[in-house]
Image 1 (cartoon, one colour):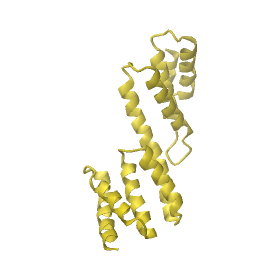
Image 2: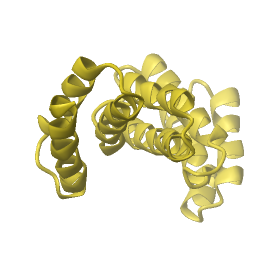
Image 3: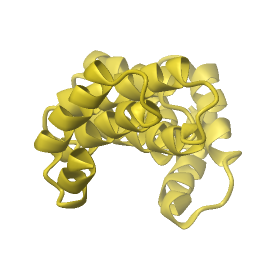
Image 4: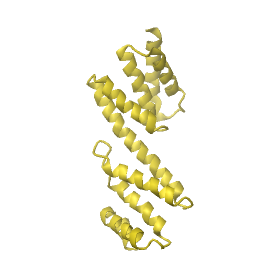
Length: 182
């Protein structure tokens, strides 16, 4: 209950310590799965904005994955998966900001490294779609891989209609016309 009190007060460092005590010293308790889960949430809530160091975000992700492996029947599994999706989006945003920086500074190979990380590791979020578009744009700017560019842009255009992707899809349609003409 002490851990829950700290958590409710948003004192996540203290809550994490108390949850760790629960997990370590009271492994037989009915609250152990809650303790594992809430430890992950403490890290998640302490993590800074995506632009900054994401060590705590990676820690939260690792703890959620461990939680899912250990407590396969926990009723908290769906909530853990929801948090993992939020974490993936945060990490994808961080990688996308890096990719954009390198693109704007014309360091295209470095940009591709970050874009590939997003495409490979963080599917099904806004930044994944943006990464497909920007990767196609890198190929276009470099004058290479026309077929792959077309494929990437078509994948962008196949995504469901969402207001936040409207601009990306508009740009993808224009770039697709430009690539096909080149």
